[in-house]
Length: 271
Ligand code: HEC
Ligand code: HEC
Image 1 (tube, rainbow, N blue to C red):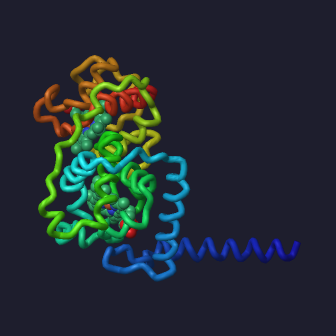
Image 2 (image 1 turned 90 degrees about the horizontal axis):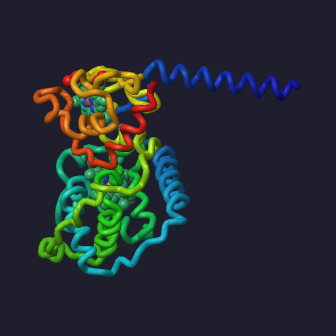
């Protein structure tokens, strides 16, 4: 009984201590303040273990086709080199100021398996600037990037400069036979930045009132005061607000049909 009392007092003291540190603003949040070694180790180990665990079941397709790697190079130049750099190529200036620093991928390509690389690229890494690409690249394109990364360790700066990229495969977004998926839609509402302007129940983000809150959007008679609130119209609005209402503050965000359909399925049940 006595030990329990002591343990409870210690827990309470730790909790109060943590609250004081938090609310007194003691923690330096600046990106120039480097992590303590133990914190850094904790984050790195957590990242590695989490990816290993989640990539275990993923089976990589054959990746040694040079055309696949050339396609991957196209996406790498379009989406990755800005942050990670390449042999003989520096990252863009903004990327050098990020914490954690996006490292050169020549190392990662050697250390991580194809399935782990695929998982990271597809899902991104929370609390870092590493984006999730699953809403922007098709599955085939994601694997093409992995195929290219696997050639990186052997690529000299000269060979990187000379390498010719193949165009991307046609977007596979357009028509998906899968039924609308609310849970996928909920994630898409975050991944297309909708919560940057709208409060959306069930999607955690800083409250923003740039656009109207979308709670109970399922009960609304009109979308944006213009279109009768049907599934088709909601999808049209999400994909092409500027065409429906030229000059509205809501930008066209490049949302594909499948993503818009899934978002609509989520929004419609907010009643
Ligand atoms: C906006 C910047 C940014 C962009 C764009 C970006 N990344 Fe990253 N990436 C990061 C950051 C930050 C990390 C985390 C580094 C860490 O935790 O040490 C990371 C981590 C990774 C990792 C894990 C390996 C490691 O070294 O930590 C891989 C693999 C990766 N990125 C691949 C890619 C690919 C492929 C693309 C392009 C499709 C890409 N990244 C685009 C910022 C970016
Ligand atoms: C830059 C801010 C901004 C972003 C980002 C944004 N919206 Fe909007 N949204 C607005 C504004 C402003 C309106 C009101 C437009 C109007 O009534 O003309 C609006 C209206 C809407 C409406 C109609 C609301 C109503 O009450 O009728 C829906 C639905 C909607 N947005 C969904 C989305 C989705 C889904 C996304 C992400 C793909 C998104 N918005 C991204 C600013 C934004």
